Amino acid sequence: MSSGVTGYLVLLGVGVAGAVLFGAAMISRRLLAPRAPGLAKLTTYESGVDPVQGGWAQTHFRYITYAFLYVIFAVDAVYLFPWALVLRDHSLGVASLVEMAIFVVVVLVGLLHAARRGLLTWGTRSDDH
Image 1 (spheres, rainbow, N blue to C red):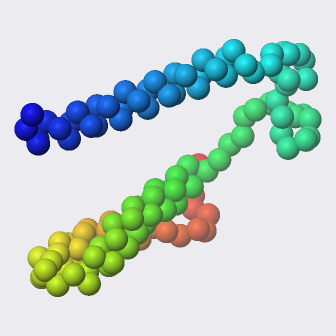
Image 2 (cartoon, rainbow, N blue to C red):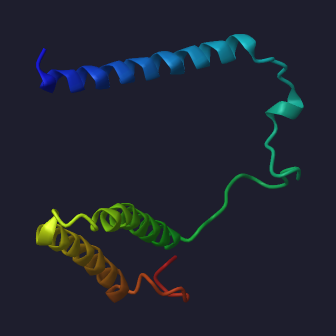
């Protein structure tokens, strides 16, 4: 077998093993877990406090902007830290530095765009309703 196919067979084997283990865990949970449904188990649990109102809670849409910014910077860190550790290897040369500079510039352009649109201000605005 050629070495190009071997990697795919290993990947397929790991995927099949993962699916089999997941299925075995679900079946064993179904067979072994105790079942005692009752009114207390079917009610909503909110940190030990009985729920007193409906489940509707209104949240400002602008909070999703902060979630997206967090994800962007978390992904940025996922790429920057390993690159900084590998940077000690002199065989990477200037090409690696240029690639990472392009990546950082793209992230900064996104941040500047968000700042220009006023998405990074926490104050109340009239158009966020």
